[in-house]
Image (cartoon, rainbow, N blue to C red; front, side, top):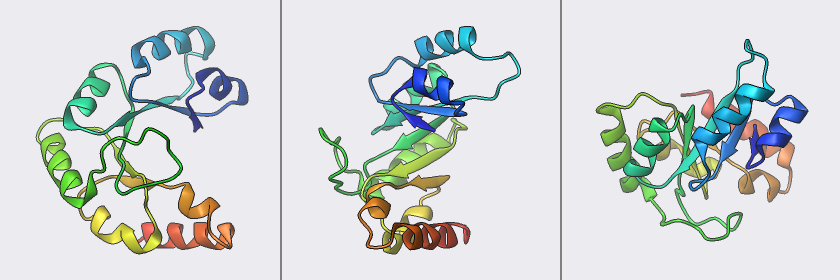
Length: 151
């Protein structure tokens, strides 16, 4: 999955591109129709911070949602409002009442913080800072995978 660069995603043979909250998903799908083989599998993810963001992204063709931030993170400038556990619970409750799309939590997630978050009903998590800032990124990745596989 390539972040915020549809052209790079297609060029390198990625199977997904994650777009920001204000990016144009519907236009991205039009661009892809001209660039991908008709049998290709490709996903476009969208960033969301509210239930309304999710609803709009689904209408525009999002394949999955990156919902956040869960907690403060230094890896993102212009951070949207922090959701915390209660924010995730409320949004997931509304989504499950009529929208069927994978939702991944993002922002400020560390191995020790994942259990209550996974119990909100999200599909999974996306991490970057916890891994790249770890003393041993390979070991930290292994720990994440081991913990996530429990769900």
